[in-house]
Each structure stands twice: as structure tokens, then as C-alpha cells.
Length: 380
Ligand SMILES: Cc1ncc(COP(=O)(O)O)c(C=O)c1O
Image (tube, rainbow, N blue to C red; front, side):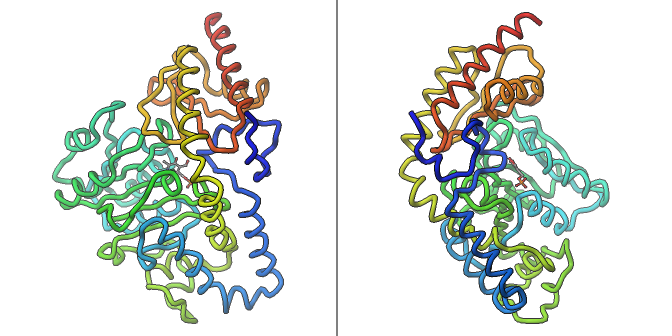
């Protein structure tokens, strides 16, 4: 079937875009909104930055916060999840003797962030191996020590596309007197969120992945009793505002970072409109049922599906001995599809993302490419 919504995107029609998960894809109505904000910024630059920007940012954040079940004053815009994680790692008073607990499904840049701060401040990062299908709380409990001060967990993991029980982790951490920090990079627009109800301490999520915002738009939510910990990673005017910003201090500190282009933030509500108008009614029919059909086809080729919580993203173990980079390139060069192929521990995984704009022909090309690669693998 031809995906009629493809015309909403600038995506090259020659290339199958099966990797929405890494960077998202921005619909044209959202880009047009962003370009309009940029036009306004360029036509009356000083007025825009000095007299309008603060109020505009607060106005833009309001519908996003409401959609995610968050109080406005507990949220701030950040350019991406990685940056938000850096703010939190920078903020928390961790030092020698302390431990921060992650698991081996966590994102590479997030590990790097915690390792760098740990090396600088003398605390320790522990990575708990979490088997597929294993209960996360049992796994965390097995690695808990009297020195564990914080736990970092993805809401939806990147490599394995697992939906993790973050509310339970929040309660678990609270009972043990630690902070819970959730990497929700893939969650906004992908799963229902009620941030005030989750019971975690810090939650950050990209708007540019599954909520159709322009690239460089994410939200950081901080529980009221943890906002005191936030301190500037980038020190700018927000620390001692020269003009009223109408925001709580911690929000001004994070959001006001000297001169920068806020158009991705300002266009984020247009992404939310797009989600409501074009996407929500289609998720079940286009994305979920197609993922079920695709899973059956992949299994026929020998792929082993990883556990799946009816997300628009699913990872499969590809059991043939192949070089992931070579297979990824072959799929792109010969079959014209962008499909992530990578190692996770000992396993070789491929990850499919099915948005409503994905055409059946793109899936067929990916399946053909994977099928042909089995022949190459058998010759190795
Ligand atoms: C689980 C997870 N965390 C964090 C990130 C980082 O997102 P960003 O590059 O937008 O900071 C990603 C990106 O794919 C991710 O999958």
C-alpha cells in the first residue's frame, strides 16, 4: 500500500525511512511553523529576543506540558534528552563513595555522560545486566548497595525497544531513599504520559522523535522537591535575569542560554497538532498491525523478535553471522533503506520503526535485503 501521508514530509522518496527512532521526521506543517518563527526572529530581531521570547516559550510549553500530564512550572525546554541528562548529572550532589545504577539497555551517550561526571567527581557508575524479559526491579535489587544514590532508566530503550516500568522504578527508588531519573527520549507521543503521576524525580523526553517537533526540541520535567538541585550547566542571563522572565528560577536557568534559535521549541505545539490530526487515529491500523505482519515475515526469515509492548518500534535478533556496519551499508546502497543494524552484547539486532508514512514497498525492500544477506552469511 502507498503511504499517502508521505507527502507531509521532505523525506527522499527514493530512500525507505525505517529509522524514525534515531532522529524523528518533521512534517511540513511543523517546519512551516518553525520557518515562520525564524522569519519573525529575523525581521525584528531585538524585539523578538528581548521583549517576546520569554513569554512565547512559556506559551509554547503550556500545551506540551498539558499533553504530557505535567504542571507547567515543573517543565523546561531543552534541546535534546542528552543535554537534559547532563543538567541532571551536573546538578545532583554526588561524590566519592556514591553509586549511580544503570542497566545494560541504557543509551550510549547517557552512559558516557554519567561516566564523565563520575570520573570528575569520584562517584561510581554501575551497569546491571538486564536479561530480555527479566523483571527490572529484581535486576536492580540485585545490584543495590548502601551506596546507591540514584537509578537511571529508559522509559523505552533504544537498542532493544523495551518498555520499562518506570513508575515502579520511581517507587522502588523512593522507598530506598534514592533519586529516579528517567530517560524518556522515545516516550512523548509514543506512549501515554502523566508525568505528575509517575512518581519519579527527573524525566526528560524528546519532542523531535515521536511528537513531530523540529529537531532540537525536548522537555525536562523535575519534581518540585528536586528543583532545588538544579544549578546552571551553562551560566547565562537566566541566573540573575535582567528582565522578568515569568518563569521559576530553575526554568530560567535552563532555558535562557544566551543567544540561540528557539524556533524548534516554538514550533513544538504544531507537532502536537499534527499528532492529534493525522497520527493518533492511525496508530493502531497503520503502525501496530503492520508491525505484527512484519514480525511474522521476519520470523519466516529466521529473525527472533524481542519482547514487544505494541510500540511503533521493535527490535529483532538477526541470527546470521554478519558485520553490522557492512549489512547496514548494503541495505542502504543496494536496497535503498535506512535500517539500523548493530550489536547489543553478543547479539546482532535490527530495529524497525513503523510510522504512518512508511510505504509497503520500503518494507519489502528491507525484507529482500535481509533475505539476500543470509546467503552471503552462509558463504562466510
Ligand atoms: C534511549 C535514548 N536516550 C537518549 C537518546 C538521545 O537523544 P538525543 O540525541 O536527542 O539527545 C536517545 C536517542 O536515540 C535514545 O534512544
